[in-house]
Length: 448
Image (cartoon, rainbow, N blue to C red; front, top):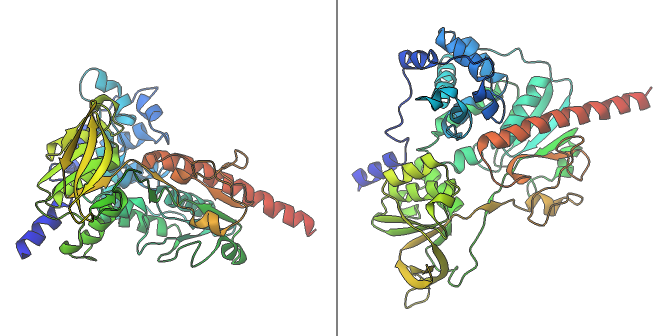
């Protein structure tokens, strides 16, 4: 039993085939860069990261300067280096990819960020917190980006997180084998050094309201709570035991890895047959997690064909390598229960015009997510669109329909990548700063 526990725990850790660069390997890779006059890699990055600049410094062994260049654009380089879709963005735009092997930009970013986390290469000149006070709700990619940017601008920032640790989806949604949690903790500590305060186990909308945060002297509030509610599939049998949503599955796996729950409390048991409905990145994460929990067979069920999946190619490839099977052109029709009508034993699908039942013990729904309504329901004046996403303005950028309340990331847009959430969050941070400056200027004029 003890060995079984260790086997499952270790299988949920970082992929064995993913090995960080050594110093020699990183510098050798950096030296391959052509330092293009018009760097296409930079154009391919949503946040226009200083790619050629940091790589040039790395090639010369100046890791401190390389980290400084990264810091100018991103608060989460160690995260981005691991989970960004580099093949579709910066790395996919590298001119060397046309003739051979592109520069492995993500691995280089990861190397520099990890080296800095261990050696503390650079120290920031933190400005005095004199420009204003801002509350950030949620500590996922958007919340961390806004908090870090505003702190470096001179704002006193407090981040409120409902979970026990900061990180949001980075901590509780992306599996350990894709993003080690110690990496997230290092990124959070880095942002704390900017002077940001984190308050956990505090659910805004329950423990505190937005009105409470304004009453505590905050000049503005940022909502970066993401899309915390998984979408369900409204077909017969959805209440059978064994039907679950992907966020529950991934969160339980994260809690198990941190030692907060036992193996018996994992939703997938060794030897079970598991189906995953959906074909995005989270579906691949859920399927691979099921495999690593000991499932005897894991199959992704998708209504269309391989060419139309929304998962990144490398995520699909990794799932295949882990032994995940795929059943195409299969539309779920009904969850099938046992004779008691309580326990799941199969999924009926319409496959190319004919119905069939796929036996399973667990079925994980991974067809997307949507924002929670907790804050909206407890705060009048914040409008959402017909799909539940917060409505925001262009001027000041990111402000909702409630004065002084801003939002960004997946809570405003459909779920996207970490770096796209960061891109929007950086623009919202500028909008918050402009708003607070304007409000404070008006108040000073009124008091003259």
